[in-house]
Image (tube, helix red, strand yellow):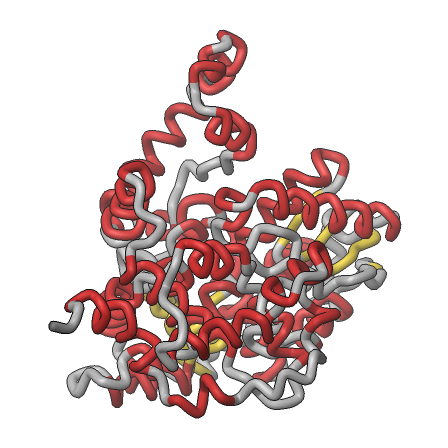
Length: 439
């Protein structure tokens, strides 16, 4: 009698077109780009080593084991290997299906892990009202001064070590979320385009000011901006952590909130989200009710820097107080996941008074990688320190980067001596400075 769990374990890799599993030529061009391989020099910790394991799982030659699972979660998912690969291996698809395979096999099960996955993936990041409620409570905790009192009291010593180490890096929640700062529809003096604005989840709570800046920049460039209320998570967090089922649910919800036919583009300002948002058609390919709409979504999804360069953004005239010696860290899912590298630099170079100095290893991962700095703190910390050292070499006092995870990881690394900003916020500041100078 066959084991009913065998079908469950194999279904995710079996869902893939087998040609995707076969794409890797095992040439080794990816090895110098992979942070985990460079750390250990072990083949299993490289992209081609992981793909070999995935193929063996798909062929039924290996079972999904805890060892396999730990290897898949040791990978940062930074996608540097996709840029290096001459064969065009679709590593993001392999990576997500491999992690889904791990979760289906449940080989990493502990009561604690199951609880935290349920709480975060199926509750907090699946229900916008709940995430905002928690965000509001966290804001009160921080703004009221209770946070400082708790730290001074020594109560944090009662927490498990991993949580105790994470607490100082907790991001500061904004008083006003995106829906408070952005109207549902905002129109420029002269309309050239009509676009939808994505507010995100972490971006909404922690970087709502960046969302406001993004809308201002779009208005300055003739874009009418439509921002649906209470949008929620796009599902990238779910897909990257092996919950493709919930990722599909999140994608459907987001698509339903936008009238795609009336929009020229869907705008995102978060690199990790953008990399996922441009592949809704893969996620919903088997859904007859959404497959066509998902393909239209993919055609219209744009990173803000990509869209601005595409439409020929207006060069600002004012010198903002943020203009200073600046370096640029390339978020992995912007440069490797979306192939967007020149556009943010074009924006930065167009800002009066801003001097851009190139960052050594600008495309190397900073260690944030979604929740990697939580699940793999040692490796993430090493990458964070390497990034901070490269920034220090430039002498820059401002770092531009286009992803919330990178922003937080780098800010925690460089401290108060260096400012971290999104390129679109620097552009918005320059536009405002120009208006101030002319008034």
